[in-house]
Amino acid sequence: MPSHELLLFLLIAISFLISIFGSIVGFGGGIFIVPILITIFHYKLDAAVGAAMISLIPSSLISTYLNRKNSNVDFKMGILLELPTIVGVVLGSMLLTYISAKRLEILFALMVLFLGLSFFVKLKKRDNQEMGVFYRLNKLKPRFVIKNTAHFAAYRVSLYMVFVFGILSGTLAGLFGVGGGFMKTPIMLKVFKIPAKIAAATALFMIVITSITGSISHYIQGHIYLEKAWPIMLGFAIGAIVGHKLNTRIKSKTLEKMIGFSLILAALIMMSNFIITG
Image (cartoon, rainbow, N blue to C red):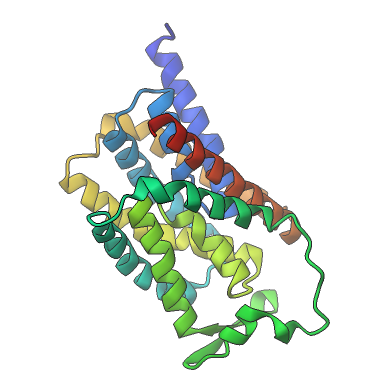
């Protein structure tokens, strides 16, 4: 049986590697670390979720601070999208009383899988970009145009679309208990046409809000054990720094492919959980 010191080193190392990847694509890493904590390190579900949630606070704060220096964080978009997400989480939790999430979990996983594959399948480009569905929907009023002068980027955002997709991602998170963070980056990319690096950085800023509120909730419920969480916090914090440095060297097209791969991986994790626990 491995020694305590070896298990501790492995836990920090795995958390570090997951955080690097999560910081690059804007997912944080919670959806990847929780099943590892349960299957490899034998954490109970509540302890694993609590440890992941509180570990995301320092890592997402570090990422947001570093990304802000590069003008990658869209604070306005992040707050606007996060507010309906919180409402959606509550709605999803309430829906659990009336429907069986287990029956829908595989459909949700398939949806995430196809979304991930869409980053690799090149569709025939339209001659006129204005024919795009999301482009037209984002013309609905009230709407506004967000400009990022540092990166010469601009994108139109409809408040109706922000509300709908914020509620959607939050409801899915509350219903399936998988965390909605990994949905934010592709939503900003696909729906609002936000550049990949800005989308990933903004998603990490949103995780700051989610992880703080989530940690308070889990602390009240007694799910946070600092003696179990600190190695993950350390690995996540260092990984966030390294991940940011690597992110600055990655091209936007490569980042989009990595985001697609992350979605596919997340879908496979959800499917495996469904098979194991189902």
